[in-house]
Length: 490
Image (cartoon, rainbow, N blue to C red; front, side, top):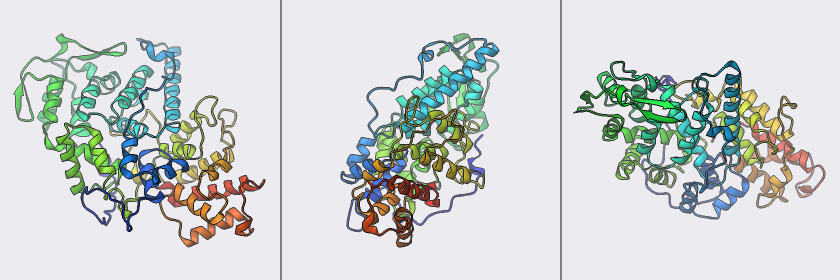
């Protein structure tokens, strides 16, 4: 059951706009590095200076269109074992192999996040993993967890109804929510309940306990054989069901069809998308407009995201910097912004990033329960904030904890600053760095503080990124920016 509603409410912000009217650059709201960086921080995970500069030279429409294009080729799998059937009755030694392969899948996925191209895909894969939360510690079969990740990747910005249909028959989900034990005469309501409560309609919205029981009967018959979902006719309840006011001999597809006839379904998932890309407190006017766009487009995700990300509401000043970075956003985004490549024989160990994200409260492939990560304010505490600062220092200094286990190659910080438009102008450089790495403009106080750290008492005109002392000075200002409260925000 979801526990999100038990969290402290997010403060309601004072928006300048209340609907989805399109953002049109103007003298008052120009399309510049500040707004381009906001768009990329919310869609990519850790935009680079080059990406922000390139986006600022384009148009919002063109940038959003590029972001919503999915990579043509799927990534290489973590290893050849993804093609094998899972162990049927694993021995202790095989259990150890399973755990190692799940860890390998985590590192593989983290590498894809850090090494991502200019696409919203990785953000959406992480979003769907949180939405259809499945725990590898319970599923155990690494092949199933890989296939589920591939499913989210395939439908990242596709059709939501199609995704729900496929998740319903996904081997990891069938096993995790006990659909494999759901059979005629012995219905198991776990998946039926979460299908409505967490995945499509929202807790208590337009359905009753009776509907859960009737949906469970319609969902009977599915088991997993190897890596495939298989329908067993003898396990299916062929009797008449009464679900959400409709009567018939329904199966799983019929139940989903009826769920997607309910207006609340579009409203619920649009609320989730709003919280992911905008703010924890959804604006009801925007949600209503997004839901209508979704229904008008037969539950396609891309038109919804396109309207949201191109709206003046999305660029409202009150919403810029109003989200807290998740651990994965923080660790992968920091690595990506600094130009690291993650993976074996790359400049940073993906296993290190997985480990740190776990320390900070987000273990890939293992959300805390079927409701996913509660997130928002719970991402940061008196214990995790120092760990966040420790992590960014480790990346900048190339000194990971457990250096015998993890690798961080010294980052090319000179190359990082030379990606900005005026790297030889100290005043312009510190302002550009601050506005690339944090969501707020650099005021006079911050500018002076940044210059003091970068120049170490030298005059502004003495700054030269090619000096021998420049890497150390750049690292010092990076560590300062990374420890600002602003850096924890998105």
